[in-house]
Length: 423
Image (cartoon, rainbow, N blue to C red):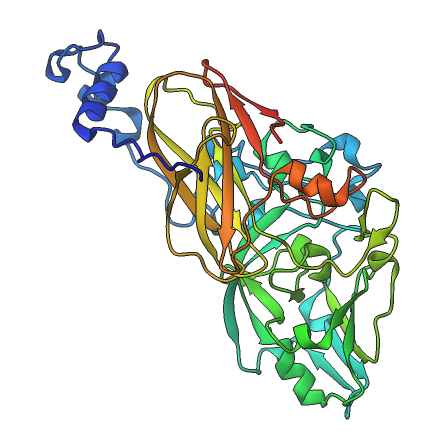
């Protein structure tokens, strides 16, 4: 049985006194009221001496320049060209659970295209009573739904199968975003066309050159799949499939077809390139299993981490991260500071919701000792996030996709962190 020590409870009064002393450059232990005056408090600053920008300074609000490092990043050597490539969400620098569209990761197979919504058409054909073509304006007239879901690339953490590779949560786990999607249930559109009883699958295609066609069982298509045209309250960004994309909750991101143009109802799957030579899981004996769509429970500590080191020294420390599961809601997250020897239950910022990111916190005191920092998620199905050794027992070392193993950060006495493997 794993032990769960009680979380440390830092004294707020001690913390504030310490922070005041450090901020003013005072000697440790000296009363806060006796420190050297802080000019940022005692002197009038430039920003309080004049007028700021007017309301029309930026017609569309942009991040302030002081946060200019919070951006998507790619790894140049991962792909031959950025046209068919991926970049990563800066999860180490974000909090909460909703990902701003402007820093949500991108994955393209033939580049992000520009498609005017007036030129948009969505065809539903195949084994249907009435083949239909919808314009963007048509879709807006159907009953609308709003749902928050995560989208995770199947290759997220894929480089880590063979050992610690990329030094940063953004690069190990940043092929993920979590947004509120607005759109029409795919079930509604399929029912409008009338599905033939012989129909058991749908084949979906995008309007870009790659089309990235994927087969989806009709049962899933009629369940929770959305045809979405808004994210976080505004139009989709070009790189996320403007004007319309598919949202396939809990399933790997390559099935979330962007620039959605056609949905064909069929008796069986197409077995396209994207579901045979790609996005299949190669096992130790060289065979590959397919149809592994569901994203299993996973978590990662986003701070402290290699891109978010501890800079304040010893004392109160907020350990935070993200957890998610394609099987349903996250029900709990445990955090270990000793490489999995013991675990403490983290505090969820809010109860987990179905197939969406959950933020967790562990409020503790850091004594300056090295830590082997890990997190372990649990979901509503009872599934517990595995170690890499447990995954390798089943999958071997040949896989690329669906690595949901526990991640370890080696936090040094300096506060800096490094990606290491403790499996």
